Structure formats: structure tokens, C-alpha cells
Image (cartoon, rainbow, N blue to C red; front, top):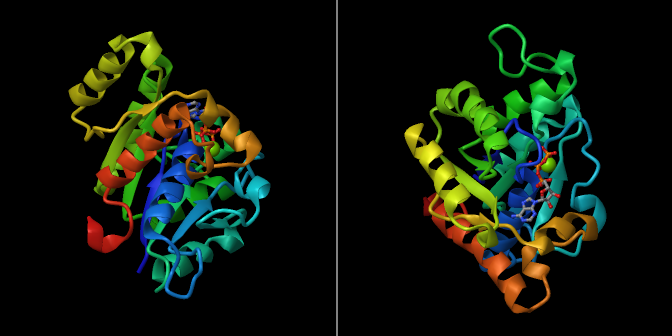
Length: 244
Ligand SMILES: Nc1ncnc2c1ncn2[C@@H]1O[C@H](COP(=O)(O)OP(=O)(O)OP(=O)(O)O)[C@@H](O)[C@H]1O
Ligand SMILES: [Mg+2]
């Protein structure tokens, strides 16, 4: 059975898609191809029924060491179960939409963090399939409250293993913002990843250019940028179920 790791935060733009494809890429590069020579030890799944415009798979085609799957509508949801039951796939990383930004009718309704509609249905299904979660957050004030809501309303009630990961920290800004975000996470009692994903321009352009960290040019900055995702992969014990 594949291990299913969902990348979740209802706040938009905190790096869910960036983390998904890059942890998938680093994990896939370490595992290498299957004995049959196929690149499907690892799958990156987009579960955004709104059809978020700039998802990697539409830009890069087949030129990556992992495969892609898309869940665009309710009828596709069974794909998640198929992947979970697959014997060949070791680890799937599931990107989710920042549903706080969804239309009102798709959002929170009485006591239900997801409300109704196709995106809500997809989120429920993703979380029912997930073995564990990654919650990226930016080290900036605007990220705190939506992350706290995501944790309290979605992540903690599930009782699944999770890690909050600070993403997009710019070392040139000094450690104050980073330490404040770490303090915030600790004060809330969250499990915080030791790995911090730094801010690099190469990441910002990656989605547009349809590439992932393992394909970055071989220079020092690119290697530093890549290192963060290898670290995160090690920290979550990526590569399948037996490795946790
Ligand atoms: N570590 C980083 N360094 C530089 N840019 C980053 C980093 N992480 C994310 N970004 C950039 O921030 C923007 C938002 O990232 P991304 O699309 O991964 O977030 P998201 O949570 O998937 O957003 P959405 O909720 O809209 O799907 C993108 O332009 C991305 O390239
Ligand atoms: Mg996204």
C-alpha cells in the first residue's frame, strides 16, 4: 500500500503545491525507478476540483522521475483509493486547494470546516485517505491565524501524524521572523519540523517554468534550495510506509 501524505493549509499561497512537487521529486530521485524501470514509485496528486491554473503536470509533461495524477471532479476521487491500494507506488503526495479562498458557498458552513460543494467533497476524501499531513506556513503574521484555524478545525481533530513546516523564510531578513513563527507554533503545542524551507527565487519561477528542485541548474544557490527538500523528505521518513 502506498503511503498518502496530504499537504494542507486553508490559507492560499503558503507553498502547498511547491512542497508537494518538490518533496515528491526528491523522494523519487532517492528511490529511483521501479525494478521494471518505471518512474512510479512516487506520485504527486493534485486534488483541486477548481482546476487551479498553474499545476506542474500541465507544464512539464512526462519529464519527471515521478508520476502525476489529478483529481478534478467528484468522479475522479476513486483515483485516491486506487493509488493507496497500489502495490507499486510507495509514496503519494497530495496537493490540496487553499479552500479559504474558495467561493462563499464552498466554504465553511455550520460546524463543518469544508462546507458543501465539490472542493469540500474532495477535501474530505483526501483527508479520509491520508496517512499523514504536512502543513506549510510562511513565517509572517498573515499566515498565523489561518494556519491556527486549519490546525484546530482540520488537522488536530483527525489525530493523524503531521508536521508543520515553515516555508519561504528569507535568511537575508535575519532570524527574527523565523523565531517568531517557531515560537507561535510551539506556543500552540504543534509538532514543528526542524527543517525550514528557505525562500529562493528559483522556487518562485519553478511552477511557471514547469520544473522541480531535482532539475534545477547545478549552481550553489540551486543546491541550497534543493537541500531543504531533501531534508524535509528525510525528516518525514519519505519513501513509503515501512520507513516511518
Ligand atoms: N520557498 C519558497 N521560495 C520562493 N518562493 C516560494 C517558496 N514557496 C512558495 N513560493 C512561491 O509562493 C507562491 C505560492 O506558492 P504555492 O503555489 O506553492 O502555494 P499554494 O499553497 O499551493 O497556493 P494555493 O493555495 O493558491 O494553491 C508561488 O509563487 C511559489 O513559487
Ligand atoms: Mg497550490
